[in-house]
Length: 513
Image (cartoon, rainbow, N blue to C red):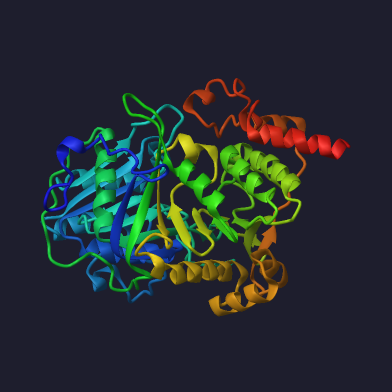
């Protein structure tokens, strides 16, 4: 780093190797907060961008300029009354006009360009942006065929950064109430969509410089020019409405990246998952869009066969989003959960889907909490792609590390808050019910909350022969880019010689005897 905290140009695109297995970098944060659900995130992010004066770097799987960052304005609350528009495309252009020294960089996954074909007004926005020399928009093609650019990172003035699961795009906005019918929850074309649960983390301090380095590296890998240095400025873009949950903590950063050109494969996220699952003493609480990772499944089975295994609770959606994703993920999930349940003699594993009334809430968040000591959040799901194919970034707080002990209560509070959100309970009630029933599954089974939001236990359905073959092949969720072209060569989910295959054979013999 240069003395003002900018990346040394000679190091961009040649990032440091991991500082330890599963961790790319540790860096301090003066303050940090988990933001649950996109209604709060979009509003807070808009305030943070308004506070930015030097650079806004946005990196994501998708951006949709048609969305409004604020919802529910009354007729008298017109944009010009506030001085700036809420629609993303117009807001970015407004920033370029009114912040004379602000450099705006936006990087979006290349195949995501196809999604813009039906977004006529977005092409108009991109044309308007092109006229502003301080707005640079790029599509990221720097990955093997079949891989995706999946990171969701924002860096503001190299002082505030965001890493998590929320893309600034369509069908993400929702409040933590997840009302079954919310008139504000509509697409740019006015079509209502289902409740949506998501999360991200906003951080301030040295960790922002680390994520700026990661973001600049991604920008140059995608063909962008070296970014100019960010001049010092007084103050911070941190939004005034956001209360810090963590202060003066060390944050770890982990990455996934497939091997491509002369860039080595990086699988820190997978290593970190396996380490954190192995070290759990009492419980693991996780939220994920998908559950189909062979290596994670094996790590869970290892723990469940112990004499005193930790409780493992996973919250995820009923079904993947879209027909193709359902073929890839839903069938693999069924086979993986079936294998885990066979190993779960002590009934310590459960997997749940949230509902608002009779409407399923889609879970897009990627969170794991271990023993109320570790919190991790990022873009990586519990599937094979996130472990080895797609570009991912996770951050975590480990309260057992020196100087982080004070973070444990905030981590515990977040777990209670998330359980409360899903079960329609106040955070204080969650603490009382956990004490009463002795487990998260016991709390979920016995609580009725507000009668609207509930968690329903997932039971793997029986699959027909074609579905089972597809699930076991990992055809659409491979562990390596080469597997996409020879999906049956290595055997997929239950590949020969894998621990998961041995587990299944072991339990098959037990059933037969």
